[in-house]
View (cartoon, rainbow, N blue to C red):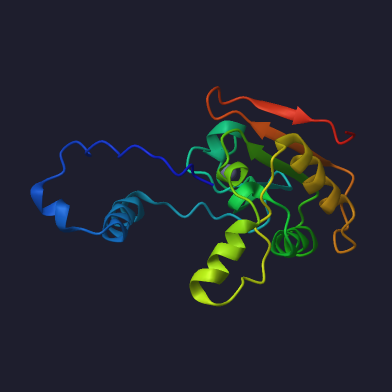
Length: 186
Ligand SMILES: [Zn+2]
C-alpha cells in the first residue's frame, strides 16, 4: 500500500499540451495501443512456468518481476493492501494450485507499508462517516516480521491448499531493493 505522502511524477518528456486534457486512464489506453502494436502472441499456457504464486502488497514502489528476476508467464502475482493473506488471497491461491498447477508460495511484505500507520479505527471512522461498518478487517499491523509469520501460518493451515510445504515469507526493503527472509518461528 502506498504511503500517504507522494511526490508528483515528473512530466513525461515530449508530452504535448494536448496530453494535459487526458485523464490517467486515457493515458493508459494510449500506452496500450503502442504496446499492442509491438506485441507478439507469446503462445503461452495459463499455467505459470515456475509453478510459483507470489503474494505481495499492492505498493507502487515494488516491481515484483524486476525484483525477483521473473519473466512474463513465470508466476502468479496476487496483490492486495499489505500483502495480507485474507480469505480472498486463499481463494486465489486455491485456484492457482488446484486449477493452474502452482506448488510454491512466496509472501512479501515491505518496509514503509501504509498498513503500519493504520489501526482498526479506520473501519470505525468509515462507519461514522457512511453509517455502515465494512465487513472486512483492515488487517493493520505494527510488527512487519510478525505479520509475515501470521501470513505464512494462514497459508500453511489452509485446508484448501494441496501444496503447503514450500511457503516462505520476506520483507522487501523499499530503500535498498533487498529481500529479508523471515523465520517462520518467532
Ligand atoms: Zn504496503
